[in-house]
Image (cartoon, rainbow, N blue to C red):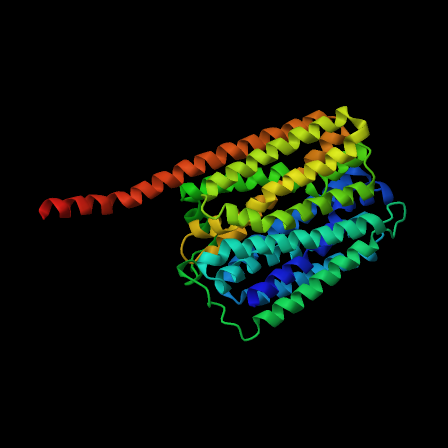
Length: 419
């Protein structure tokens, strides 16, 4: 029951992401007339807030009650995004976006640790999948509603999105708090989630990245994030609005289709891939990213169906997303050093957002300079790099498995000879 409540809370908590982020670039750049640089900086500051929050929240989730960490983080986010209805200056807007990102992302490793502590190991991939599906559904609801109600010609036209985000955070915090009351935080835990490490942050980083498999997982995390998620809320909508002349409702529809495809396919994909190795599935995700960028690249040559191709691209991305989060998070947790699961998840979230913070700036620079083909080509190359990194991870993990099995095999041979 607690896992179901956590999935529901995660879904509601993502309403604001869908209601605000796909539209904030156009809102800041055009509606408020603050320019493309401020709009891109707002997206980057959102990610920088996430960068600051994620490793700290991960460490706190190892040492303290992750329920408290998640609740407090989301309440901070609610205050940050809620105050955006009152701001009239670019500085205040940038500050609010920073706090918004800080609060939203600080809750992420805490929720992931709750899954690890509340759910038995054989059910974790399924619960991570349901959690991701719930978050996608929340994003879809927020994006679809906002896409039809947001007025980008009015300075107060995005207030509904800001208030939706604040309310979503508050309700999500209430549900998590209720789910955590009197709960045994270690009901489903195993060695991965117990005995918090007393290592310093620097020692934790060394321990985590001393593992070759985690190093390649870090490359996959970064490239898959850059290949789509870094552009989901800013670069792709900006490309659609400025280069393909897609209207805001079309952008909202694309985000909704993305989430609907995830919801429709998630359970089926989890069942079909249950016995597939994580690196193989991540290779498939990178390949789907490549196909998505190729399809999007054709939209500029077919203006009459550009909006349809843009929506289709988001649907193709969604197929890869059904494997991305359900596979990557449990894989990262399984590779984490003992007692450092929360720290590892937090550091990887920070690593992801560090590079994702560059995404809006890169998109703003390339699109602002009229280099749309450069924008498309760069992300196609990044997606190909993700495929290579996943292939290398598979090789490393296979070698590691063979090394672990070799001593026991040799011992068995000796025993047979002795007999």
